[in-house]
Image (cartoon, rainbow, N blue to C red; front, side, top):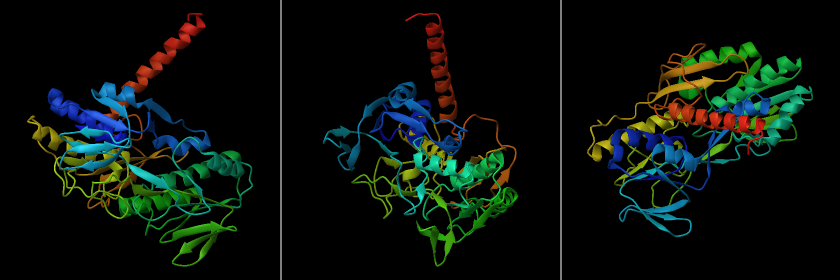
Length: 385
């Protein structure tokens, strides 16, 4: 089985299949990147509150019981069951899992884009200006379409906490969002609780406003109007990574059934952010992978019973102070029963991505790396080469 993408969904898929199908499947992961970057804590990086963890994909694949090739798949022939690499190599497969994720594009022209990695030079400049009381108005926004809105609110709440630490009182913070309400995908109750939290922290909220561009101190919005701002931070726009031969919509997202099977293709699955499910979140991606793995394991003759994708939201909201927790069932892509609470309504786990297999797997990998670092430091302290 060939997995395109060594990201959250791809790794969860490999781990789940190894558990459910055992030695009945040979797993190969291909990705053009050498590292797996754990991004959820990136909202804290510009504020000095977090570090972004990086892992060798080759090492992680080996621990998953899979092989890894540093390569990019550009097209697929579903009839011949061949994947074609960027260099023209043909890679045969019996089953294919597309987990290539999304492309992040500039969301609002003129705004500072938060890319979710640790080279946030422009973001760092904005935060420095905030700390030094150089901004009278700082706006956080996001484009419309499929996305994960939580970082928008986290960045604004972190900024509010940073103002309190720096004893800055005259800067106006605001969120401008195309959503009809805060955290719209997560339902009315979670949105009401988020609105209350924003009000407590002094963050203004403007909903139903699509950002168009930022120039000359004004954020222009649709359907009409503008908002004064000294600086604007925007989340990026998302598009699915297109692979020729795999059907997708105009934004690059792939339509799948409740088991992750790509519509119109045989033995081809898609999981994670590249699918057309509107919520792009690591925990949701792992659940999509788990559902696909049960179907694949069943087809391979295992004892696993296929379990359809039934999304449950578990999200950790960083606030710069005490975290809050989102929990609820996403009905039709919306969290009609979701709530925002001060205590996690699930057993305590490390990290912000809560995956059945990936969370304990990364915890173990991190411990191995930490032990190795401590061993190396001890040797250096003793003068041992």
